[in-house]
Image 1 (tube, rainbow, N blue to C red):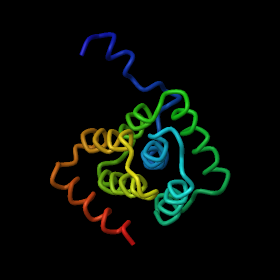
Image 2 (cartoon, rainbow, N blue to C red; image 1 turned 45 degrees about the vertical axis):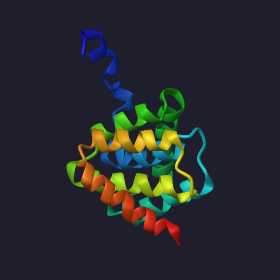
Image 3 (cartoon, rainbow, N blue to C red; image 1 turned 120 degrees about the horizontal axis):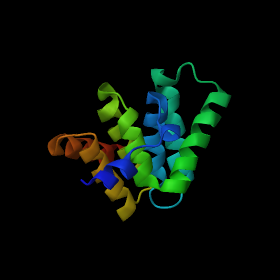
Length: 147
């Protein structure tokens, strides 16, 4: 990687994300990977976040502020950039959960687009999830989403 690559790949300070923003950012990047967010994908994001202790202290306005920031990054820089920002702020103990959430969201509308596959691959690599673990997670979520 050259010097300019290091400078331009650095996450701008205003795009640095908290662990809550990072988890939600991964989910949103997956949902928005194909250029639109289906209602089932949005519902999946909301359902996941409501169940996590990570968001116990989040109010309606806090969620609005968080998603405004994440949508800005997604719109201006794309899903891959949102993943990169999100991975940087995600704690180690949340990586598998975030990956599983993203895969579940990709499967929610019944079709996994090529762009979504790319994000899943980028996530597995960026989060350093072993291939056999990633495959197992995907297989279980395919079974879950058949019903």
